Image (cartoon, rainbow, N blue to C red):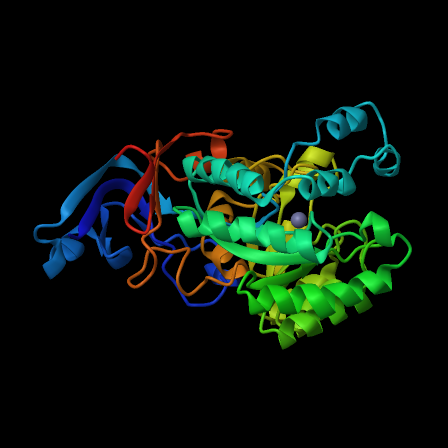
Length: 416
Ligand SMILES: [Zn+2]
């Protein structure tokens, strides 16, 4: 049976061209005041003015869900997360607040490598159980799809273990998860000082295995001073391309190494962070199809300067927003918090932020043609917010409440 969602105070369809939204389209919400969405078999059949949708043959006899004069948007697509880990890094948090530097925290056994030890010592089934609990937290906050990275295993066995945990949870649903192999996240402690050896193993073992087992759609690299160079990034990108995987990159975050230009030249779906991007980087992104995926929750949590969102948008780059949810630098899975930070700190408008959190997030996860907007043929991923005006989503901090979240036509969180 088909389902009809109607009586939204504002229906944000995000309808528009089939490319990442930029320039004139960067704040195009496709806002309808008396809109409706007709859904069948998990996909959107029609979305538009209520009268027109009601005229569709499938609307006769469809089950009805009234939005009760609330805002309805596409589900958030969170295109950058690290959600598979054992424990939060509470000791690091406290130490940093007391003035310890990143290097000092790493020296006393904290940081990424602490999370790596936790993951290596945790069975795959426990990692999957943790991720499954978190999946419902995402859904409760209106996120219907996430991209999820490995990167806390740092050897073949443990990177595959993380990706298999992701596959298990993705297979059970309802949260949709796009898996990314982030083998090049840090050099593992057992190969300290032997980075080239590790990069060779990422390229020669991890990537081919992950691709052969269908465990990853993308490869990603932490391209940063002291971690992986642009030359390493190119090697991983080559290996990923050879294995048929798409490309993402942690780019120009703590320093500007030039990875953004490489990502754009290679047609990466996204270049992420970009705190140190300059005007020429903004122009490079504006000229190509790579999405600037900004994760300002990590800047907030670490009290670091924010990325140049205004310069990127004004230059004509397509901008996505994501949480960067992870146990070290951004313990936030709530896209509504990110909307607030994007507007108050990055000076994005509420409309720009919502485009960035939905359709451009979908493009940054390689799903722009099937997700992120309410258009015929796309996944019926909808969220009903306890708000009458879409600007409230960025105005109330971590609120208004999500009334219900729908994934592929079924209400999976809250009550309709
Ligand atoms: Zn990240």
